[in-house]
Structures are given as structure tokens and as C-alpha cells.
Image (tube, rainbow, N blue to C red; front, side):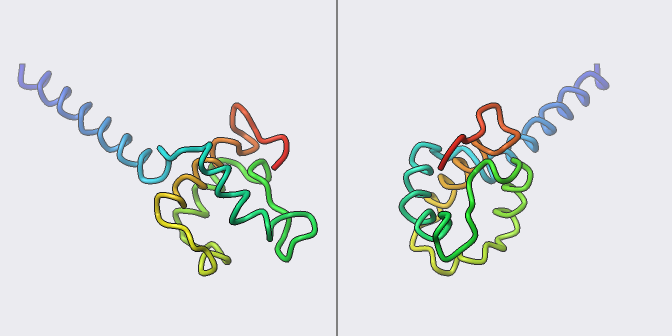
Length: 107
């Protein structure tokens, strides 16, 4: 009985840990993120923009996660969006990454 209880508690704790990591980034609104990406990012990250051309499908989901978790986004200081908006942009980029079930076909 005691071993069964410990196993159940361990499974619950493992599930909670995985769920908390999944919600650290993500859970945003990809539709709003697409709008924000086009409004705030595509002006520079377009073929003729001042920064390198960039689309969601240019990176894998893991690469987008690493970029946003590290906070090493070169143009972040120029952003005028809040934390929830950044999360929405991340969700859009992540959900349409090249290894996602529905990679972006165009920006």
C-alpha cells in the first residue's frame, strides 16, 4: 500500500513538472501572435527589410524555444510589446515552425 502511494505521488509530481515547463512559454494565442509578428517584426524581417529575412518555418520548435528562453533576441530592446504579446509571438512561431504539424508556408 505504501509503495503504491509513493508511485502515485511520484507520477503526480512528474506530471506537474512537465506541465509547468510546457506553460513557461506557450499557451499563448497563435492567431494574435501572427498579427503581432506581422505588425512588429515583419517590417524588418522581410526580404527587403533591415534585418535578415525570417519566417516561423526557418527554425524548429526547439530552436524557437531556445531563443525565447535564453532571451537573446537581438532586436528585443526595440520591441514595444508586453510579456503576453511576446508569449503570443512565441506561440505563433513555435506552432508554425518547420518541424511542426503545420509549418508556415509564407509569412
